[in-house]
Amino acid sequence: MAKYPPEPFRIKMVEPIQLLDRPQREKALQQAGYNLFALPAQAVFIDLLTDSGTGSMSQEQWAALMQGDESYAGARSYQRLAQAMDEVTGFRYFVPTHQGRAAENLLAALLVKPGQYVPSNMHFDTTDANIRARLGRPVNLVVDEAFDPSSDHPFKGNMDIQKLRSFIQEVGRENIPLGMITITNNAGGGQPVSLENLRQVAATYHEAGIPFFIDACRFAENAYFIKLREPGQSHRSVREIAREIFSLADGATMSAKKDALVNIGGFLAMNDEALYRQACNELILREGFPTYGGLSGRDLDAMAVGLHEGLDEDYLAYRLGQTAYLAGCLSEAGIPIIQPPGGHAVYVDAGSLFPHIPRDQFPGQALAVELYLEAGVRTVEIGSVMFAYPDPDSGEIMHPRLELVRLAIPRRVYTQSHLDYVVEAFTRIYARRDRVCGYRFTYAPDLLRHFTARFEPVQQQETAF
Ligand SMILES: *Cc1c(COP(=O)(O)O)cnc(C)c1O
Image 1 (cartoon, rainbow, N blue to C red):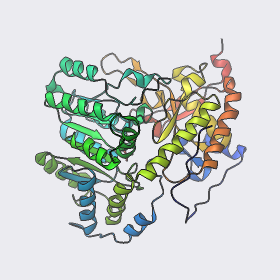
Image 2 (image 1 turned 90 degrees about the vertical axis):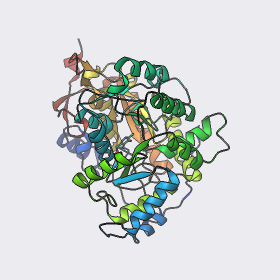
Image 3 (image 1 turned 60 degrees about the horizontal axis):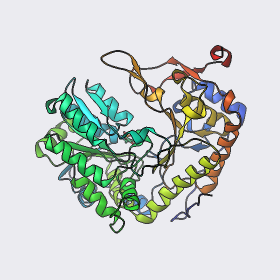
Image 4 (image 1 turned 90 degrees about the horizontal axis):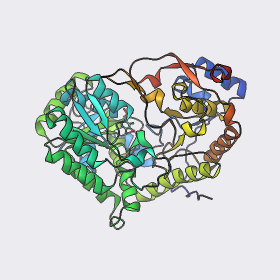
């Protein structure tokens, strides 16, 4: 049996949640076009849709909110955030943004020209889409182990350095305006990247003269995995490891809604002064003045505190322990998951759970729908709904390698009994897995379609022959 770590906090404020009955859940789902993003939150009992901005703030963060300085320019809140940024990341310049994708938009607007390539281990959906929106081409060069759900490689988020070198050779440095890496690798199972790999990635980009940006949403969880798993790193503090990670790069984008433990916020950081000046101009055009970047002063203060709290090692041990507990229980129940579990989420391999559902009928979507029907649990598909796009050269539909469902765990929100309840729902679905049907689109936009698409069930007799 996996062990559940006792929470290193106690609860001082509660938010009621309610489970609708089955007919109400069926109705809510039909009205939502079988897209869980379209459900009203009150129709959801346990919400594992995302760990983004859904965490609980600490008493220190709530206290910091009260000190928010709402001055338009040069607010004290900005100064406190700038100090935390300097202590935690060490980048010379940064602009606050309202969330991660705003930082990605700025970066893509400034650097990516039509037809250019941006390599990474794996881009997350918003990064991928922001590069495509500038007519650039996101490229994923993660190690092959990332696609083997049973491989227990400790750093499945690593970049394949050979693939990266050949890719740079093949398309030419002049067609690569920046290189990235995502830590942890959200789209590939929340898997960490080793410090050794980050050093090699940095060296490879820099040898070719390519600026290196980190998508740093879960830098603290990644640093804690390095401490736990990487030879020679266990004696170092997570804070020190994180500083080294940032020191390898020329800049970073971050959604502070993840490891900075706030409900809204983000940043774009960099060492290059000219790029910073351009970023300020773009920011003023789209987000706000460079000392608030589309956020209120109090948001900046909560982020300043959260950047430090996210590195607390008792918190990180509990955080990764909770995820490992859920993964362990699901595994014991026979549910195929990506092993080893990542930091912020457990990824269920819906493709192997439902081998009878073809990929263009979205096995991941089918599982997400079923979890809601069964237990009021909301999750998200990370498979062909999210990532199957036509190849820009051939027009052929390119499916992602895996059809996954992500159970993202909000930070400091749910307890062991909530997770046990989720496991029980899985057990019941597992028992009738052969009878679960696929889905097809009735509406889908061109980009980021998982947010707004609508579906209908594909009846079993239509597929059986
Ligand atoms: C959440 C996330 C983003 C985007 O951040 P938002 O705050 O949702 O805009 C980018 N990259 C990764 C890896 C993420 O997890």
